[in-house]
Amino acid sequence: MAARTSTTKDYHERVNKVIRYIHNHLDEKLDIRKLAEYSSLSPFHFHRIMRAHLNESLVSYIIRLRLDTAANLLLHSGLGVNDIAYKVGYDVPSSFNKAFKKRFKVTPTKFRAEYDDYKIDYLSNMKNPKKMKLTAEIKKLDPKKVIYVSSIGLYEGKGTERAWEKVCRFAEKHRLFQKDTEFIGISHDDPKITEPEKLRYDACLSVNQHVAPEGEIAAKLIPGGTYAVFLHKGPYEKLIDAYDYIYGVWLPESDRELREELCFENYLNSPDKTPPENLRTEIFVPLK
Image 1 (cartoon, rainbow, N blue to C red):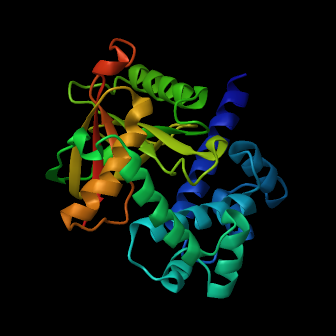
Image 2 (tube, helix red, strand yellow; image 1 turned 30 degrees about the vertical axis):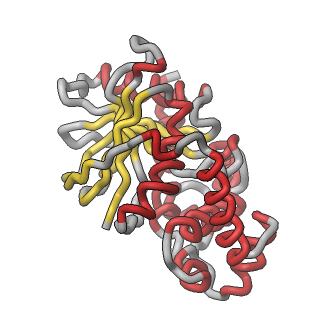
């Protein structure tokens, strides 16, 4: 039994290693055989192992990740379509356009234009969108060491709950909890772009020491730098409204530019002990 548990942990570590590599090298050619070598897994079994963890083939995962990243760049950056194509690993813009249209049913240019129209209509139909009055506090942060467990699926689903249970059990077992431990969530995907069952989320705990990866427990640095920090009050299900306000109202009016890093959330109180309406969440938005 111990040997089986050790083997399972080893597989999780290798899968996490491959996923991190893919996320950090989307602009490069990703050769599946080299990814198999990088994972130290047998090429014969590599595809099946990755499919079992990702709930889709590795090739499909890479294509979807590139196109979803491109969709976010179209919405939240001033880069041209061709530049975005190169940035997500397409050497030929026409191939990118074809793949993008296959996924989103419209060309990249039309997606950007129509989504902008949608945002304008959405914000104009919101009940007093500026009534939210989310105020940004600009902070400079040092990099944060975190351990985390990833999940795939609905952000408010069972997978996310299990990820938090696993990372907290690990921290308790290894006595990693400190008075200043932060409970941080990283949502990799926009639920308005990516299918609910494929949303990627990291349940993270800040740590003050080096922690070696172990099975599903991975470790990384959240980049430091300048962030706009917003305090959201209320249930987690309403966080999407806060993001709509930040991107649709605050950002255009702020004259600030986004940095190409992920936002993250710092949960200030426990959902197990706090009524949903009293939950407090800091949203960190990376700025140039």
